[in-house]
Amino acid sequence: MNLLEQSWYQKGHWLSLLLLPLAALYWLLSSARRGLFRLGMKSQHQLAVPVVIVGNISVGGTGKTPFTLWLCQQLLAKGIKPGIISRGYGANVSKPLTVTVTSTASEVGDEPLLLARRSHCPVVVCPDRVAAGRALLARHPVDIIICDDGLQHYRLARQFEIVLIDGRRGFGNGLLLPAGPLREPRSRLSSVDLIIANSGNIAEANYQMQLSSGNAKSLLADTVLSPCEVTLVAGIGNPQRFLITAQQAGFTIVDQRFFADHHQFCAADFSGITGPVLMTEKDAVKCQRFARDNWYSLPVDASFCGDQNNEIINHITRLLEK
Image (tube, rainbow, N blue to C red):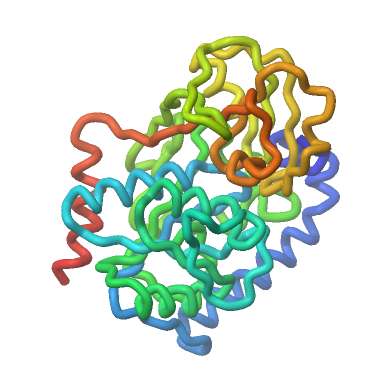
């Protein structure tokens, strides 16, 4: 974690205080932009099917990808055909591009590639989510669109907003970028439809999501790694959460190499590592082309307790009844 991120999760850190004027400017510009959409001075674009936003109000990993995968699985089980649109962060995408299982992370982004491989749903990426949604509908027969990380993309009209919050890190110091980790003020939560806390308690949350790990799978073969000593490698928004997940799965972390979120890995990043490497699925899709036979990825799946599964899905299926 760099100095800026450290300041976000410490009350009264000198760097956050120094950046308060920039945070005020950020608030002014973002509030004005949202206000223009609310007043109709900037146009929102409706798509032909309901749009569900899965997003957050803070930067860094909050569990959107495992939740999106869970949501797709639940909808498919009910005979509903979802499609996914995403920005394609980390890739040079200028027009709508369909993600396939043979795409590369450099072409479409790491998260969209993982979503395409695991969800069994069509995925289209483009920084312009409206264009991505239109392309998805033109190419695939879907009943509903899930927009990954599009909460602040107000050009795209939406029928339902779901916000994920990291239950361990919460809202940090509660300040807006760059003085804190928030993209929008905490008050924004009062206007969303569902708030889900990931792996912890948040007062505003409607539901709590748990993440559980599966078997660590080889990047090159159909083999599994039993709990042992590993070097942990991650280029995600919250690597500490991955570290805890790996430990809970029984692995002993003898070394760790953490990189920035969406880091574009190369073979040199692994120099000097001799023992087994354990990484996230999101990182694994970027490392397969130069992987070694002792590199493994640890998948995680989202789950909810009791009747929460049905309650969440019922919120979504009601959109199709309107």
